[in-house]
Length: 237
Image (tube, rainbow, N blue to C red):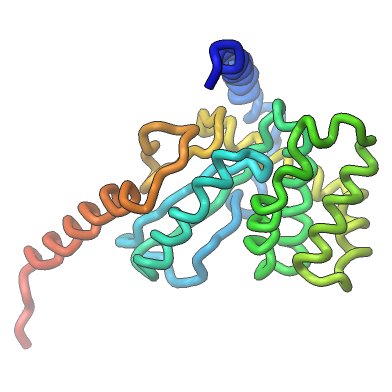
């Protein structure tokens, strides 16, 4: 990373963190009632109990680091199966021009067909260059949003095109996307990707974590659980 680019990023992150601090202070006042369900998209559809390792990932659909972080995280989730659960939260960063619109598209699709949400997230990661800053500088907002709608429909099924388009005119989907932003702010998250394991922040936020690192985090937790079960007294009938 060049000096000028690095300085710009640091300044952007600094000012964004100040904004998030203000949002954190006002979230309780601005949100009179909590949302009807917990924020985020659940990737794993299995029973969660007190022994389940809970991973929370904060992603921006047009963040290159979020894109790079997804494959090793997905590999780890599949490796551990029901022992680990994943919730993905969206944090549309203000210095990524269409982060909010792509995040909103994910909320719309999740309402229409929850099983297609992560397929769309992966499509945004795959075709990220089409919606990332300079590539959209000569296009109108309506043009770019229409391209987002088309990609979403191509991913989840063209029969959903009208419903996805209508979703962008629905105030509820706008509010859901704002709530995701506020939730991230309430957790003190100001960059993507950011990860939490069992409620505790994973070091080196803002960078991708490879598969080997995920194993180094999770294996010891599962080993500790196993030792705890072995230490329990065995009841004889």
